[in-house]
Amino acid sequence: MYEAIGIIEMFGFVSAITAADAAAKAADVKVIAIDSNKPANAETVEVPLIMAVKIQGSVSAVEAGVAAAAKAAESVSGLINTHVIARPNEYSQKMAERVSVGRDRVGHIPNNA
Image (cartoon, rainbow, N blue to C red; front, side):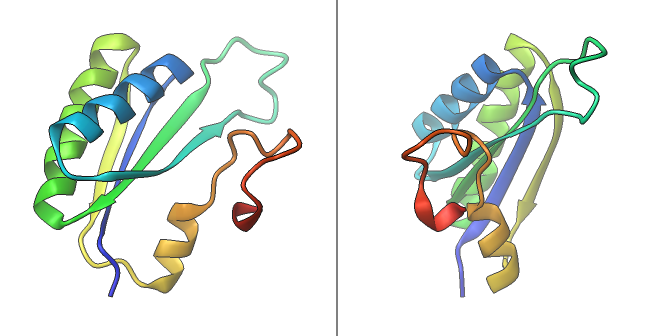
């Protein structure tokens, strides 16, 4: 059985780092991934970068971490959504560990490819 997973989705890289920091300071959680999502036509339209911070720990710690991260993200550039998966299965766990940040550079985390 895997520990709970929390996902916080927001606008912008600075918001993501701020949210991850807030979550880690507010509760006993581990930041397991930071993801970016850029629409396919992002070069032709002005859209903000959508980021997701993924954290893991006990259900109560993840809930506290998500709340702190959401508040931090909202104060920087805007919160999109949050979600807590209390009892993730192996497939949810695998997807939560996948990251897109840094995949375009040499030296990215190999097990997340």
